[in-house]
Image (cartoon, rainbow, N blue to C red; front, side, top):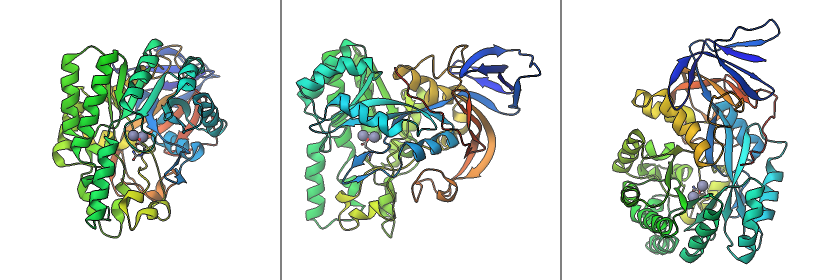
Length: 449
Ligand code: URP
Ligand code: ZN
Ligand code: ZN
């Protein structure tokens, strides 16, 4: 048995000074525990003990924009555990012509035996047809209870198709997330920018204004209302979108969850005007926004209007992959890395404006609840999985591509001085990282939900 002593246990409900024992991958007791000579004792003095952090939005080993994301499950989850994330919910993606069951098989193969963190899959449905509809119950049986649809990109579904997805997913109590951007408007606005000669990264946010997100959020909420199905607005980035969510929540009638990401609460769109193509490092969709959006999102986090904080980790090498769009911003692969730095960055942004319990709720407990993993994950209950983070809240360090484990040649958080770091990270009771360095353990397993 391993016993964490002298730490402060943190759950979404509160904090308490207590010991926690785990054995064979499960938490076996919490409280006053007297170690026996054969037990391994880990000193958590001065640290918080959180249930392992969960990143509910990652894109590992994803073929997209004519390339493949820089991080696969090996490097991505190495970064994850070094930062304190013990479970990722990645987007298995059904491409046109493929079946959803085959997409799950493909993604499981990508992750199996390689992942330092546990992994579950949302299914991104990009080709909705009779076959996909028929396969949903089998997908559910295989442990997939959350889905994603796109309103933009060549993976977009029509509104009618999204409505049908919501109806089908509702039948077994699942949840559907949506990339809320009006894809038709984005294409039109991109063409307008290009024909005006605006080919550099500063045109990226102009081609995807806040209204493009807010309109899509509004539409997705109405599809939720029409069906009564549970929906999740992913990577919310704007005040306007938030206002649509507030209206929908006030009307009620369906479960509505909201995810946002630290980058939208830290950076504004001035990054796209950086010289030497540096703006490409921040080209993600939705784009970075304005000060008023940053403030609105932060206020929403503090008010409890945002349910989960994820990364949308979708990494591409700046030196090679991002260069595809040097002469045309629409050709820059969209996405940025973050899987390794989310807990430290998020806690540094908010500091004492949020409590340790708030951090637990937003980074662990709520993702576990929203995505059907609670209380096995996201809790410190007896019988829960021993996915644990011993977090040193006082440790100061500087984020840099030089000390990261993500397989990418930059980080958008380069040079950021952060406070707080994972001291010990256990995945299923196995020590996966110590002082932000990985151990040799590759202990991640598939989370069947
Ligand atoms: O730019 C981004 N966010 N790329 C990842 C795919 C998505 O839209 O979630
Ligand atoms: Zn998206
Ligand atoms: Zn994404």
